[in-house]
Image 1 (cartoon, rainbow, N blue to C red):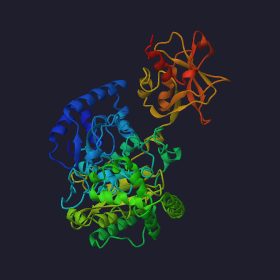
Image 2: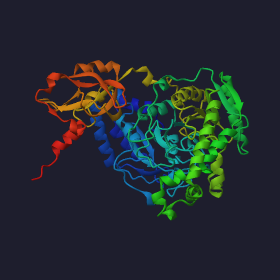
Image 3: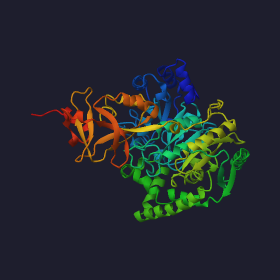
Image 4: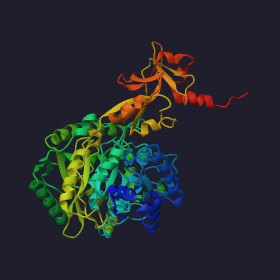
Length: 604
């Protein structure tokens, strides 16, 4: 199972293997000690998760198509919450036990995946090197004298070595891309807000992106499709625009490349990048040199400007009382925030807005930019001797991307003459990550590289398609027994419906508890004197929508419901005959609140 892709895990299950057997064997086989891991699940936790997985499979009538990550193990960077495992952010004094999974983790669990552990990182996700952790240094998986890259060092390591087919990292300044480039794997950095950050320890909350590591673009996209969704609990979460589903790079794209690429004296990296550009051109791409100095101005705002204060804000309460517990290099970086004022922050916002206008205009001339993922590769000893300047060098082509709200995908490009991996990164406007991955999949296949550090061949794969675009979805509003956690929710999940968000109706509805219904159900009725009623929105494939509607019993039906923002969706409504014996429960604002009131203990 070492080095298996998601498809290979799925094939193993189709051939009669079980998650219980394979995952127990996987946990038993893990080397110890291994600085890539901070914590691992035990057999008891695995058994509990397997019990949940059985229930999930039963809920979809055994159809694995509805659990696209069924039984697939993955790892999570230890600044992302996983229930049952402590979150440390690589700082023992900061450790806490989360009450629930991060939203992005929960979405992957809902797709059938299984977390096997939490991975090491540069403390508080501050660094691009992977050496700033009290839990040890995950070495580069190709040559252990060299850094793995950070801050998502452990997440990249366990994927490159084939322990898990994918992992979650985070990316603020390149932490989801640099480790990918230095370990011969794929790093997908989505648009800001595409993945929820609820349950993620922030570095710079306005810039942070949960990212995906995988050995193939196909696997990275499979994870993206399962994880990306609007999270109403995260004020910076965003819904994927409908038009993003159909975007692709042209067969012969036009790329912008640095007119004077910087490699900090690394001739082998320069040669590898030059070879990659020539290969792109041989495949039909047009590569146009452009002045990248604009991006240096943007990047300067991150660590030399007021955005460093956002890193301090993220851990201010802890830092004010635990300064000595913070890694000295991390502390020196974060505490630079004391040099900036609120006026500096606003001036930085204004400057970034002006620079973004120019950057967007430059990017509009191209289908994407193509840059070295990392301009050079340092030994661990070199980073420990000069930790700040060399770290900054590694971020030359990554630091500006999140500030500009762009998408990026790091993909292997070749092996340098010294045997170290070299990667390129495709950078495009927001919501282009899937289009970049589709192009990168073809590119990656043509390199002839092995998968990560596994030595396994990069097997031919079917072209990545946008499954979301190929399936016509109908948005449905539910108000009662079909809500999450309610007895009829399985009628949605069994039809591959996907939860979108919790919201409310317009303020001209009344809600009634219907009489003689099993299980108990409410009825939503439009009224001249009403209120906003809490509801959930679900996207259902049109091919299953008909059977869903056919199963709705009278006096309920599916009609048109107006939401608080004035938009309309299909949703549950009630016929007038349903009001016979019904109780008006509008005052509770929603079905869940009404049921909660019934369960309250009546005190004498």
